[in-house]
Length: 249
Ligand code: GLP
Image (tube, rainbow, N blue to C red; front, side, top):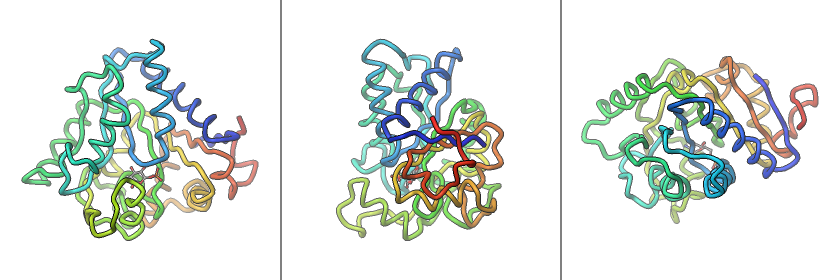
């Protein structure tokens, strides 16, 4: 695992944008996994700018979303599918039919999970972006989730429900209690992972993810076992690591 630290979040964003561009340019049909949450928004703005300047095209890109709230359709203003559409996909030249997401309002969620898992097997993800949740989750793999799980429905933990207030919900009661998510085993099959963390509030979580025991109690620790993973941090998020734990850029 390689951990790199930048002076500020803008330098983090520039680095990740450049890496995504490289992956897109190195493949005839690149498959990118996108995360929601506040952390990657600067990266998405950077990708939009690059596209607008004609420096990158998403015409051949297939995009896979990580997770969704159960009970929210892709057109619901608080769904992750809608958030990805509004903040990124609608501003790029990506073909709509190449955007894939879990359907939070499918009649049969088990079948929906199998459908999505199969789609990902058929379109292996070249680069998966990740963020870390306040309870150590990745996507919506909450603490205690088996590392062997594929796509599945999950009961959201208290920290995840509370964090959702940052995603446009006004009251806790409005936040769905379940999520549907790519599993750890799904995520670990991606060829490359980029985990981004920013800010002091992520510092202790980052320390445990990078240096703690790999354990289902702290799902993001699994990335230590991936053979092509970059952890990209700003100084604040790296503040609980030792200097020998990372490269400074
Ligand atoms: C959310 C999402 C994750 C995201 C993570 C971090 O709940 N389910 O996909 O990566 O938590 O969110 P943030 O970047 O807002 O801290």
